Image (cartoon, rainbow, N blue to C red; front, side, top):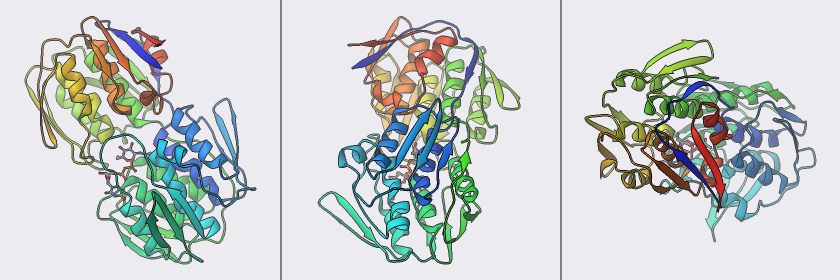
Length: 417
Ligand code: UD1
């Protein structure tokens, strides 16, 4: 087991470089199932989740080669098979193989997915979409099975703009017969990135990044090379790290458009920022104001930044309210922050935060990926030493987090225990 030990109260300075977006790379790796030609993903983040999805593909005989940070995926010998349930339960995104595997083999069976423990996370919308495309779907004994001789385009309205369901349906529909329209689709930048990957394979997808996506089915897709977008959540986490330590740092590798809701909230708090192309200078060395935050599907405030903002608001004088509307059980970090002296009251989907003068270093536990990152940045600002255990959650989504923070001057170590 490993934990991260942070000595708080040190000012950060310098530059940090953002990696490619985990949430783009995972569906893109999966989408390469749709072609029997090689696909290359350049500048891929070397993360635990990326290795897990690679193992899921390997378990159906894909050939995956990682050279530096370039991933080559060759699915020419792909075989119909069932990925091990152990792998699938490790990560919810494994379920994304469903759409492309049906498109390629006309049938597929996979165990029900796992992932961060942040709510019930059903898959009804994925299945509703696949059913609308003509797949026969059944669930039993912990498995989902689907089959379709031929997927046929259809109009699908999503009751909620689910990121995963939108991606799964897009990948199933790209080689279906005729046109598919996904209404109330998720509009996250990672969806746009997946669409641009699929289009560079020969797909015909328009409207990705809006709430209506049109997909005209094609007969086959070819191999391609793609460089994914920057990770807006990793960037946002380092921006929050600057604010919580009242420091000035430069975060390199951002897309201003993708970070709009985060930039807007930090601006409202009084953090000053200056954007130069792909880089942003964040200066948190000012009196910060409390704010209210409501997480929403994109372009609303991202749920994946909620925990980090909670850490930040814990040390801002006054009352802030965070309302989580995307996941029903995403406040587990609040309990850990309270161990550090935070004053937080949870009432259903809202957290009321009374800013305290200083957090105090404690032993805390990463309960999920973003919660872990939130506790690390809380530790940067706390008095004394914070030890964050179960750090494997953080490794699922942050490339070398302690090395990047060390590069900014933080006193942070990873230790085995
Ligand atoms: C993706 C991201 C995750 C992010 C989330 C929301 C990846 C690999 N993960 O997760 O980091 O936190 O988007 O931005 O990209 N829902 C249903 N039925 C479904 C599917 C989802 O009710 O069939 C609900 C979920 O329970 C949840 C909400 O929709 O309450 C959002 O889930 P969704 O957008 O699907 O998130 P993921 O794709 O799992």
